[in-house]
Image (cartoon, rainbow, N blue to C red; front, side, top):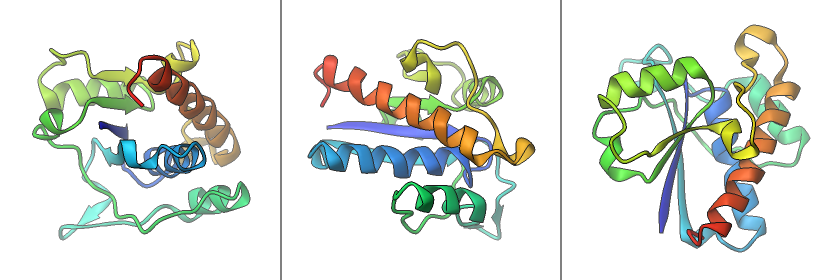
Length: 158
C-alpha cells in the first residue's frame, strides 16, 4: 500500500482539495483500498488551541460543484515524523517545497515532489487564497491528480 500526503501552506484550501479529489479518482478506479491519502500544511496558522480549521468554504463549494465529496477535515500541520510514515509528499508550490525541506531537514529518499511535475509542468498550483480563483486551483489540482494516478499505476504502485 502506498501512502501519499498532499501539502500546502495552511491545509484548508489546496491540499485538502487534492486529498478529496484524489480519493474520488482512486474510488472511481476501484483502487481505494490500495492507497492512503492525507493532507497537511507547513504552517500552524489554521490551528487554534490544537483544533484545526475546516476546509475553507469556497474550496468546499468548488468541490461540490464538481461532484467531489468533501469529507470532514481539520487542518493539520506537517511534522518531521511524517517523513517516515508516507511514501510521497506532493507540494502545491515552491514555497511549500522550501518549507517541507526545512521541516524534514532534507529529502534523502526523494519522497517530495511538486504537484504539477507529474503533469510535466514546472509550475505552481494556483493559490486561491490570494487570487480568489478556486476554479483555476481546481483545474491545476485535477490535472496534477490525474497525472499522479497515471504515474502510480505505471510504476506499479497501485
